[in-house]
Image (cartoon, rainbow, N blue to C red; front, side, top):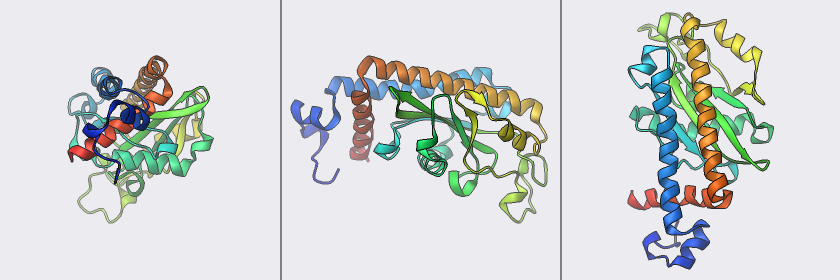
Length: 245
């Protein structure tokens, strides 16, 4: 933003040139991004199976822009503050390592390595790319705490653990769904190591269904306002937040 001038100082032409939409549309889109993440969270709260999600809100949702825009994050859910500072880099690190060129509609990519995603192994990141006319226009993401990822003790909270591997199984970026179909070896890797699979399995399915909801809402936004305006709206929200900071 250096040298670009403050948003409030832009005339209508300069605003449209920078953000590819008018001020009203940019404001509406900013609210729409927040609506998408809160709608995903509200549904997860009412459909989750484990108490850590249903009763303690130990998860977060975000909307993320495409790789060509360097994964900007215009909306983060109003949930546990710990996730706010890690979700942007979690998505960027996960997708870049997996490879954006490998993604296709219906994919869900997951990871939980603390050194890649910023929190402990119980917090699994689920990221779903959103495609419009063959191009990635963004991602919808949920990071959620799961009751157990294996490790030395149930739940992973041991006072004597010496390394991250005693917390539980560490997942590098990998597909959970590919083109809408479950990737069996990923599911097997997880459930060969956890203790509470009967609760984790429906939780993971519920999370993925809420990603599908987020994808539908973001696609509806793109179809109504156009991909260029949506990407401009993402930039506007991030630039406006930077100015407020």
